[in-house]
Length: 213
Image 1: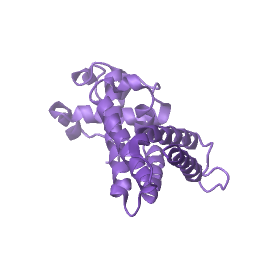
Image 2: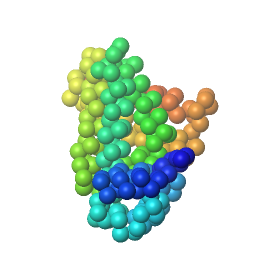
Image 3: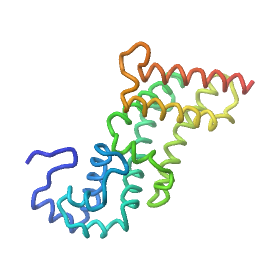
C-alpha cells in the first residue's frame, strides 16, 4: 500500500497501536501537520484523525497537545544533534572546514525536516517536558564544542566558545528561516543561504578571535 509523508496504515498496523506503535504514529502525524500548517495549525484530534484512531486514543500517551509537540521537539533535537556531530567529524580535516560542514548540515536539516524544525524552535516552553530541554542542550553543546575547536585552531582562548556558539546558532536560525520562507535562494549570488551563513560566521569568528587576544 502506498505511503504518504506520515504513512498509510493498514489494519494490521492499526492493531499494532495497542502494542506501542500509536505514540510514534502520532509523532509522525504531528510532524506532517506542522510541516503543512505550522506549529499552531492543528489539534490533537486532527492528529488522531490523520492516524486513523479515535480522538480519545492519543491520551493513552500524551496528556495534551503540548506534550505531543514536546516529544516531536525532543526527537527533532536528537536527530539534529546527530547530523551536526556527523558533519563536525571531530574537526577533521581542520576545524574551519568542519564548521562549514556543520553549517551545511544545519540548513539541510531545516530544509528536509520542516515539521521537526518549526516545532523545535517554535517556543522554548515546549521543551519543558519529556527531555526536550536536555536534547536541545546536547545539540547546542555540539555547536559550542565546534566553536571552541575553531577558536583553538586560530590560537584564541576557548572560554568564549559558548558566546560564539550562541551567535552562530542565532545567525544560522535566521538564515534557515529566511530560506524556508523563500526570501533567500540557493544559487543566487546575492542571497545564497550558505554563502550568507558562511560570510556571517566568518565575521563572527574574526571578531571573537580579535576579542580574545
